[in-house]
Structure formats: C-alpha cells, structure tokens
Amino acid sequence: MMFSKSARLLATAFAVASAAPYGWGPHHGKHHEIAADDFVETDGLRLKDNAGTVYLTGLNYWSCLNLAADDSAGGNHTRFITELDQMAAKGVNHLRIMAASEGAPTWQPFRMHPALMQSPGDYNEDIFVGLDRCLAEMSKRGMRATMTLNNEWQWSGGFAQYVSWANDNSEIPYPSSWNLSAPPQREVPGTGWGNCTVEGVDAAPYDNFTEYANRFYTNEQAQEWYRCHIDKVLNRVNTVNGRKYKEDATIMTWQLANEPQNAIVPDEFLGEYSLELPPAPSDPLFAWVESTSAYIKAAAPHQLVNVGFEGKQGKWYYQKVHNYSTIDYGTTHCWVQNWGIYDMLNSSEANLEAAKTFAKGFIANSSEWSAEIGKPVFLEEFGMARNNWENEDKEYTYLSSAGTSNKDEYFETIIGAAMEKFKDPAGSYTGSCPWAYGGIYRPETQHANEFGDVWAGDPPHESPGWYDLYDTDEAMNIVHRQQLEIAAFLRGNGHW
Ligand SMILES: *[C@@H]1O[C@H](CO)[C@@H](O)[C@H](O)[C@H]1NC(C)=O
Ligand SMILES: *[C@@H]1O[C@H](CO)[C@@H](O)[C@H](O)[C@H]1NC(C)=O
Ligand SMILES: *[C@@H]1O[C@H](CO)[C@@H](O)[C@H](O)[C@H]1NC(C)=O
Ligand SMILES: *[C@@H]1O[C@H](CO)[C@@H](O)[C@H](O)[C@H]1NC(C)=O
Ligand SMILES: *[C@@H]1O[C@H](CO)[C@@H](O)[C@H](O)[C@H]1NC(C)=O
Ligand SMILES: *[C@@H]1O[C@H](CO)[C@@H](O)[C@H](O)[C@H]1NC(C)=O
Ligand SMILES: *[C@@H]1O[C@H](CO)[C@@H](O)[C@H](O)[C@H]1NC(C)=O
Image (tube, rainbow, N blue to C red; front, side, top):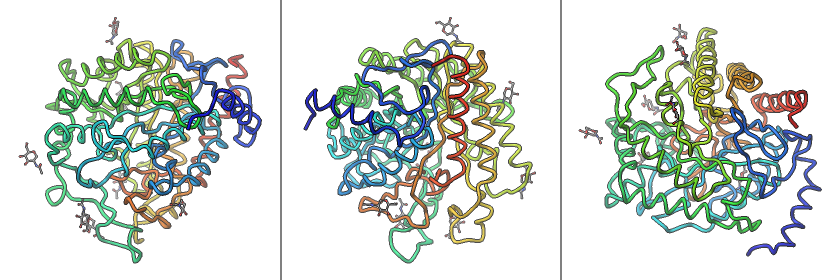
C-alpha cells in the first residue's frame, strides 16, 4: 500500500518533529530529514546538497535490505531500527548498502539469503520491502545511501551468479570461503564456529573464481539481465513513503558493483607493495564501466554514479576507470591485512606501523590521482581486525572479547588522513566509510536463522566477527568525533 500525498506530508512533519534523538547532523546541528529533491551533486573536488558542502560520515551496512525485511523472511526488524538509531547517534549520515543479490536454482553457500532476485526478473517482494524500509528510515534520520547494484564477490551472488545463469546454471568455482558448519562446531547447532574451505580440497583457486566471474563483463545475456535489474531498482516505488527510487534524494549514488576487478590478468604486479597493475587499455572492465554508467546516468540524471573500485590497482587503473563523464566521483577501499601488509596475530609495534604507513600513503596518493582528474574520492571501505593475537589460544580467533587498541589507532590514522585531504582545498577526499557495522551482533551469541545467515558485519563468505564494528566499540566514537570535527570545520568556514 502506498501513502497518499497528504499522508506523506504528515509523515514528513512527524519525522522532523521527532528527529531530536538521532543526534547531530552534518550542517545545522540536528539531523534533518532528506527531502525527496535535495540531491547531492559534485562541486569540483567536493560534494554539496541544498545546505552546502557535504562530508560523508559513512558506514557499510550491506545487509540492510535483509535485516529490514520481516522476521519470517529472515530479517530482524527490531535490530534494524535499533542499529539505525545507534548509527545516527554517532553522526553517521551515509550508508553503503546492497541493492542487489542473486539466487540460484540450487542452494548456494556463502551468500545472503533469501536473494532479492531469485532468478532473472523474479523478485522477492519481502526483500524489496526491506530495501524500501531501509531508504525510508534512513531518510528520516538524515542518512543518504550508496546503492550497490552488483558484486564481484560471491557473498551476494553477483557476477558469478549472472555467469552461471547465462551458462545453464554451471557450477561456480568458489574460492576459499568461510563455512559456518565445518568443524569445529559448538554444541548448539547453527552457532558456529566453522572454518575456511581449502583450495584443492573444497575450494577452487582464487584466479579460477575471478576468471569465471569476470566473464560477466562480456556476456551479452548477463548484461541484458543486469540492465533489467537496474531498470527495476531505479523505477521501484517505495512502498513505505511512495518515493520512486530514481527521484529520491536519499539515494545519493548508484554504484555499478562492489569491487569490480580487472579482467586482464597481469604478468606481474608493480609498485612498492606489488599491488599495482600495468596499464591494460583493452581490459573489458573499462567498456563495461563506460556503457553501464552512461545507461544509469541517462535513466537517473539527478543521482550520482560511481564504480565501487578499490584503487589498489594503482594510478593508471584508478584514473582510467573514473575518468568517464558519467562517473561522478572515485572510491577507494583500503585492506591492509587482505593485501599482506598487516598481520592480525602479530602484536608488534612494527606491524601496526606498517599498516599506518601504508594507509597514509594510500590516502595521499589516491587524493592526488583523483584531484588530477578533477573528481572527489570517497574512502568507502577499510577495516582492521581486533587484537586477535589475544584469541590465539581460545576456541575462536574472532571472539569479540579481544581488545581493539591496534584497530583504534589505525582508525584514527586513516580517518584522520581522509579528513586532512578534505580540509585541504587541494585534497579530494569527501568522507570515510568503515567496513562494516555489526551493531548488536556478537559471534558469541550468533545463531544462524532458518536461511543460514547470522548477519554479522562480515558478509557470509568471511569469518563472522573479523571486521565487525560493534555498537560498544571505540571505533564508533572515532567515527563520531570525525563528524563533530568536520561539522566544526565547515561552520568555521561558512560552508553551511
Ligand atoms: C561445510 O562443512 C560441512 C561440514 O563439514 C560440509 O558438509 C559442507 O559440505 C561444507 N560446505 C561447503 C560449501 O563446503
Ligand atoms: C581449519 O582449517 C585449517 C586449514 O585451512 C586447518 O589447518 C585447521 O586445523 C582447521 N581448524 C580446525 C579446528 O579444524
Ligand atoms: C582452475 O583453472 C585451471 C586452469 O583453467 C583448471 O585446469 C582447473 O581445473 C581449475 N580448477 C578448479 C578447481 O576449477
Ligand atoms: C581524462 O579525460 C579527459 C577528457 O576526456 C582527458 O583530457 C584527460 O587526458 C583524461 N585523463 C586521464 C588521466 O586519462
Ligand atoms: C611481526 O611483524 C613485524 C613487522 O612486520 C615483523 O618484523 C615480525 O617478524 C613479525 N613477527 C612475527 C612473529 O611474524
Ligand atoms: C604512494 O606513491 C609513492 C610514489 O609513487 C609510492 O612510493 C608509494 O608506495 C605509494 N604508497 C602506496 C601505499 O601505494
Ligand atoms: C534479532 O537480533 C537479536 C540480536 O542479535 C537477537 O537477539 C534476536 O533473537 C533476533 N531476532 C530474530 C527474529 O532473529
């Protein structure tokens, strides 16, 4: 059922009147509801809305559409509302959420369940309503969204699932992933712990998976289905507040995919950290970014479009993938453990210093790359494990009881670096967005629901509790202090 126009106005008035508990907003103090037409635009190396310069105090909350769905559809609506209020109280004004997930004819491991799209064109209305609720509740709390439309990785289905659909449901060669039901198991079924699947035993090599997934870029059938999905989501009319998605300023950005990878495998990796790729102008990634972004821009001209790129691939790839007129701003993801710079089981000062040095260099470099192509950049993923060396002799490596001193120092460093490149007029950073809000979830009390998911901050292909940000974590105070510091800066500079 949709609200009539006047009911909607009433709803708006109510939300404004009751906005006080949500904490301080980015411009004027208290959070304000996002008006349907208060779109964010780029302004040189910055973002702005009707109230002035926008700094994104973000959090990843990818599972929102499932959490906000009815309990009978695997959701947890009470938890969803509690967590939105928690995030708003810490000054969060941006959430990066999934606006896609794909199912298969047979049950697939390592995934969000149920999927938004069970098979091409076949949608689960319960989950779509979950997405409606996310946007409606975010809007009330002054939060805008990045809507991620696809995924390089297996945890939502993503590229590999499209490729499988397009190839008679061929088997997906999953890389090593977290299997919640593998040994060791706790006494109560469904409460973990599990272990990783092992390459050569029950997992394929990583490169096999990316090769399979990246066929997506050039598979015509897969591209047609993907564009149908884009049409479906852009034209969705929110069942809670009646707003059409493509006309709702709560949606700041349409994101092509989470971490699309290069489809040309390099002979060698370059740079101090062996992460950079040599230039490869014929990489099908680029034609896909160009055509898809133009497609979305034409359909939703008031909203922003970006890629979802990590930026680890170095300057050439970063600039090439973001230099299209239909890409509004760049993104970076910074993963010191996954990229071999940091070891979560190593308590030495040198280990932490290596992570901090990398992060500062990565932010400084990417700020410059982005400024050169005249676009803002958003640090939309980064994370660090807890002091998990403290868990080494315990039953599970990712227990929430471990301290966070390294993580906190790292967060201060990387968020501080992004803020610096925001305050500096020559810098191009426009906010930060840690991975990922777990809120009231804890591994110790987890229980897989009837669909097999626990909804940790970590997606279902990774060990639950690895990168989670809990409501009581100091990291959330660091996020909040960032927002207060930037608000004071903007006030001081007459930006509001
Ligand atoms: C996970 O582990 C269980 C128990 O060992 C096993 O039965 C199942 O096949 C595994 N799942 C995957 C996807 O490897
Ligand atoms: C978990 O898997 C690793 C191999 O990936 C193995 O070395 C380890 O013994 C396993 N742990 C348990 C408790 O089974
Ligand atoms: C991985 O790819 C190689 C080369 O294409 C192939 O020989 C091998 O069978 C694949 N392994 C799996 C587990 O898919
Ligand atoms: C970006 O695009 C502009 C306009 O098409 C072009 O002039 C410039 O050389 C490009 N920059 C890079 C780094 O590719
Ligand atoms: C811990 O990290 C430091 C810095 O990278 C390294 O020198 C040291 O060997 C590491 N210790 C262990 C036990 O891996
Ligand atoms: C930043 O760029 C400098 C100069 O190219 C390079 O030496 C350094 O390794 C880069 N830092 C990172 C984290 O990539
Ligand atoms: C919702 O989440 C909370 C916290 O994890 C949990 O205690 C509760 O049982 C969950 N409810 C449902 C319906 O899953």
